Image (cartoon, rainbow, N blue to C red; front, side, top):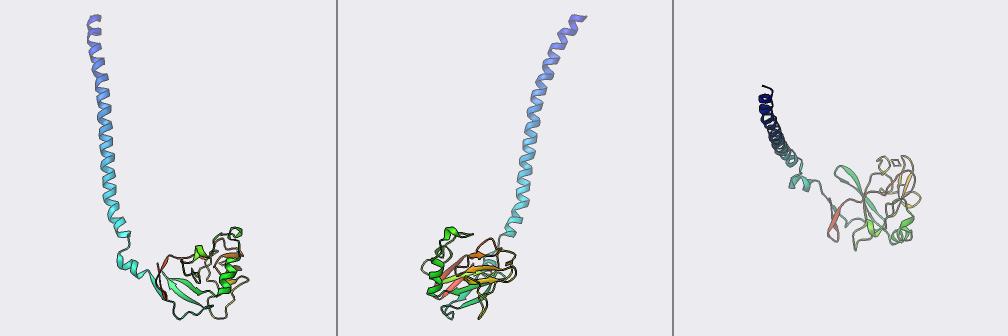
Length: 194
Ligand code: FES
């Protein structure tokens, strides 16, 4: 009676182990299949969202700004608007270019040369956002008779940041130079920002 029990228990035990291994593999497969399906499902949901977020060509065109430089004399600046933010376009005098180039850029808080911040062959055209990099006030210096600060560029009256003739931060709390947006000269007197 006891022997019969032993004889039957071995194949039963072996069968249970075998089912266990197969069962684990099947479960793994089902889980992987479920995850894969979930991934495809998530992508299918995300794709329309991402494609909606990508700007269309006409939106991109609207978000660029064309500036006519022909009326800006050496030593003058204008204020324009780029993507709803102030933009400064400045025609630097030779003396202002020389002042910017006389500074050792590596000694600056945000080390950049005037060449780094202007387009090749257009060293006199300083094009920057008119937004202080401290807390976002609009600096003075682009308008006729405005305070240009201690370094002859721009001055932010909110907390006293001084920018030089390359729009680089030289004194005060602003951490970075005025931002240079992407732009391209489409002729000697026309530039497209954005
Ligand atoms: Fe310009 Fe603070 S926002 S110095």
